[in-house]
Length: 256
Image 1 (cartoon, rainbow, N blue to C red):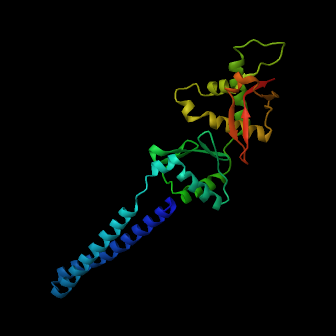
Image 2: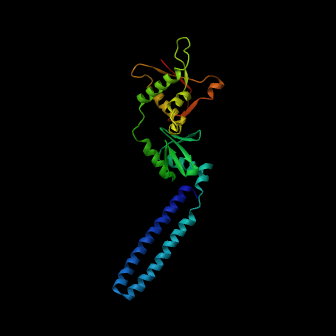
Image 3: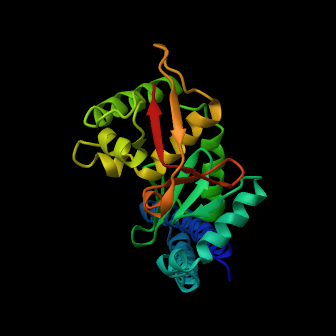
């Protein structure tokens, strides 16, 4: 049985237990009324119905417990969960792409957290991880108006560039090329900031800026991307996935 089917079966068993509990509550109310009135015949009938109701509730709860056998943590680690999530997303016309231990569903970046039985989406932990439920949440979040502000992000890049480039010599009067991992380091100087704004999210935002062509500040300063050259420089390449799942690389920038 697949995980989605298991959730559905558990939901059905729990629903049956709830309905049986409601019926039991009705019988107990009748028993209270019969005892209040001293109606012996109704007392005996309500007691019998209450006993039967208790047995029905216990049986439905036992059924739920017996059916629930999935090791969710293991399923998240071995790919079974991701396979079902991809299928649930595809049914909603949502495309997911996996790279570098991340799930890219532009503009969102998600990460499975098997030991926490949760999924992190852009820094927010989601514990409602039933595949169809999570796929619907991703679709809903994708439809929200973008909170990304290209002008603000660009200015932050330029400020960080000035901070890092100011420590370097200028060759031939040209603006120096600064590695983007150093820019990210300048943007996340405060303790814990790098966990709050990861390199994956930084690379995603670089792509958003690049895609929109927002490369000139209001003061007229122009940002240019520089590609990595040589094996040594490629070790500091940042990668992200585009809207259609293609790999996009970023290494350095210069600002004139």
